[in-house]
Amino acid sequence: MVALVGEISFLLTVLSSYSRISLFVVSNINILQSIPQEITFLFYGIAGSVYEICLWFTIILNIGGGYNEFNKEIEQLTIFRQGFSSKNHCIKFKDIQAIRTDV
Image (tube, rainbow, N blue to C red; front, side, top):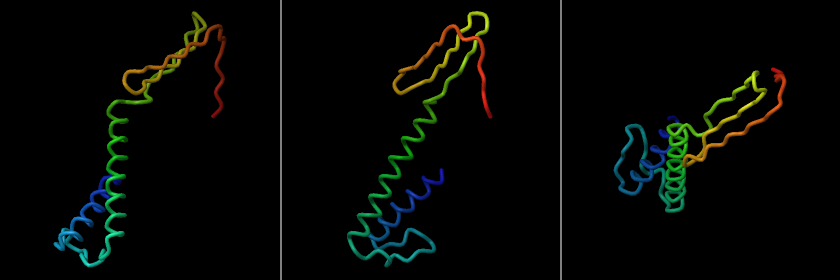
């Protein structure tokens, strides 16, 4: 969410500089006077927006979510993870007697 505020501020800075109308209450529209600065700000705004959209899709689609299951009866360990476009990954280990974890 913080990245979204930064991206929007970059894009609004470019729009206010291009249109010469202050879109911010406490900003000076004469800060960006050259085209390379506007292009750089525009690039950062667009790149940040694309990055934010990818992050939200990862959260909404629950990419990387899954479970670990250790079944003592059949001595099997199952690791399941969800991936992009319904490509689920399931790894099964057999003949496991115990699991040791270090914290």
